[in-house]
Length: 520
Image (cartoon, rainbow, N blue to C red; front, side):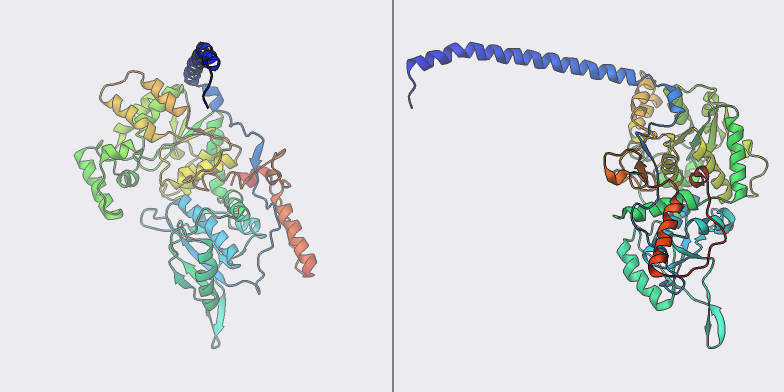
């Protein structure tokens, strides 16, 4: 439709007005963006001013607290006549890899309605430690704590065949890595019913961590943070060390992952002498799959453990001074004293379980007992800092345990983000070094509740399954009664009443303080 001259004139008169509005809007947006940019810059600048005093305190819980008590009906474990058979496992790896395997073994027994035989711990050539489960963990406490979850036996029972008594022979199976629950309820269970017992070996990372059943995940937490308590002598030694360190004020623990096996695994060898490089290359060929690794590439993607000096530079950039009390948890550092010298110059108040411990821990401090003491001291320290959290089960498990034990501060350096900063420093480019380090580190504090995002392991962050809120917005997050065992006991008794089953009265009532429940 054709418009008249009046409309055309009106459009011409409106055009300057529209242009004026557009210009005003553009100016307003420009001012707003400049203002926002300025605010962001100021916020970023203020973030550089780290308040070290706040780091010594626990993180803000936002109303959350640890709880692994069931939130729904949890039936009791099978009786001797109801069990589908016996489950034996051999846990391999270091102390904390084995700890994870023990938790998985309890879950596997639960989902198969089986009786768990006390797990076997690895006595490989590296550890040279034959302590076994009964030499490291408090067995009576383990069995008592899990009595409402899984049936536990100290050994496979004897059977009578042709009038002769002999041990029931377990059928050996090598489980697939990260096996789903369905593998246990089909393949493993079928063999168990056929033979009466199965033996899963090796048993490291043999059950998927991502299980879509909150109650099963809470069982993992009950095992890890309540049932697995070290033997009294280990707990006593750990307590004495912590008390001695704390008598002098706050203390920080650092897991310094700079041993030969880790460096060889990571392929980070260029910083060592030619002779040391030969040792690392030889170790790698003998123990790991052949793979071409380029040091610079490995470092830029964050695969190289931090050196002791780099750890010291990070702490200094954050504002920690040379009076900071530090407990070092580590094996034998590779490369001799020259790597520790710069760190000691910055932070001379360094301790380990040998220097501060009450006498000799064990004849072989490389063994599981020494690692157990390190674990407990790091758990109870005011601040924990792992220097390598890749395949380090020690660091990953501790981060999760410290979250569960009251959201304790953990500083986890982002090695990938820090790598170019340290590499610039090595070639003499030091301008703004500490400021750049602070910018990275301000984004890496861990301590408060945060959503677990893949690939973060469940054992590193069991939130939200093993946490609850006193005054939740979501009813599903509401805290159950404080006493886990009261909850389970009530359900157990309810089951008894419904089925009219007579059972022997227990000679002891489970009574564990809140602190004891958590610090184990």
